[in-house]
Amino acid sequence: MITVENLTKTFPGSTGQVRALDGVNLDVAAGSVLGVVGPSGAGKSTLARCVALLERPDSGAIRVDGTDLVSLGGTALRAARRQIGVVPQGDSLLRQRTAAGNVALPLESAGVPGPQRRTRVAELLDLVGLTDKAGSYPDQLSGGQRQRIAVARALAASPSVLLADEPTSALDPDTTGSVLTVLDRARAELGVTVLVVTHDMGVVRKICDDVAVLDGGRVVEHGKVLDLVADASSRTAAALLPAVDQNPAVEGAYDRVADVVLVGFAAVGALLPEATNRFGVDLNLLGGGLTRLGETPVARFRVGLTGERSDSALEWIAEAGGAVRRTLAGPQGVAA
Ligand SMILES: Nc1ncnc2c1ncn2[C@@H]1O[C@H](COP(=O)(O)OP(=O)(O)OP(=O)(O)O)[C@@H](O)[C@H]1O
Image (tube, rainbow, N blue to C red):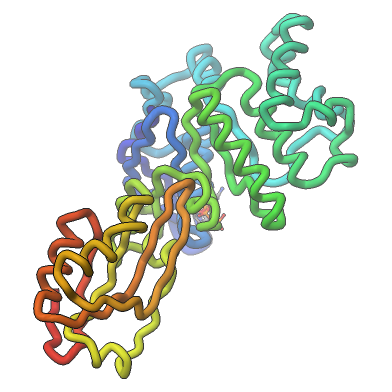
């Protein structure tokens, strides 16, 4: 479990102080993946560097399993740093070392004896699916393979937290998938808590349980991805759900029009047909579509309903777990 409390960090800028972090509060449950997103200059990398203990915040606390890392110094700080594996931004492997040699580096620094080191390196190469590349040098690997080796190296000392700053920024979509799979395996198989800084909402879509949106050094949105998408006004919903186009000419023909967000197999598959049957209404999909967040199917549809019991049908969908937001379209124009 990581808890960030009221973290503040300022830097001297050419026109005065730059407040890179302005009272940031976050928590990441053990074994979950948090995506930190936001526009350029929002403070994402500064937050990552503070959590990695590479940068000292001006004030605030960073607790890992209850211990405030900011208050530590000397030996205790060095020990705490080992709890946090870091996948740095950009290409970070040593060119003159093989893939296995790069993964072994933190173990050598920690004085782990040869036979144990070899076993651990073999486990990590297996985890990232690159056993056959053990003897390859970074220049012989693709960008995605190098990044997977960087993840293996970050995991070598068995940290409880893995921090990755823009791990996919230089990669094409296919390669990005293989790196994200590796981060997901680290969480699933090793129980590591993962904090991933990214400008790519695709990363959030594929592997994040939670998301924190930073803007101007502040957290403007934070929560479970599947909860936030149900709130149509959230930035997360805007970025991750299928768009619905306005079409007043078509919508005007219905008694009621609403946007409905459905999360999970059962809701996506059954709620709308069930509402149609129960309330004897005519329900048409006017826009939106289906997507997937991690393994979970999620839909956002604009629906048009005709029939006397249209309101009851919408209320029932909301009670059964759908997020319903009525629009102003329709002849009787009823707002939520
Ligand atoms: N070492 C530094 N010295 C001075 N200003 C800094 C330093 N590091 C960051 N900043 C400033 O702090 C603010 C936040 O920067 P940061 O790099 O954390 O944002 P970011 O969200 O990671 O941006 P990007 O997506 O562009 O990497 C910016 O205004 C940046 O210019």
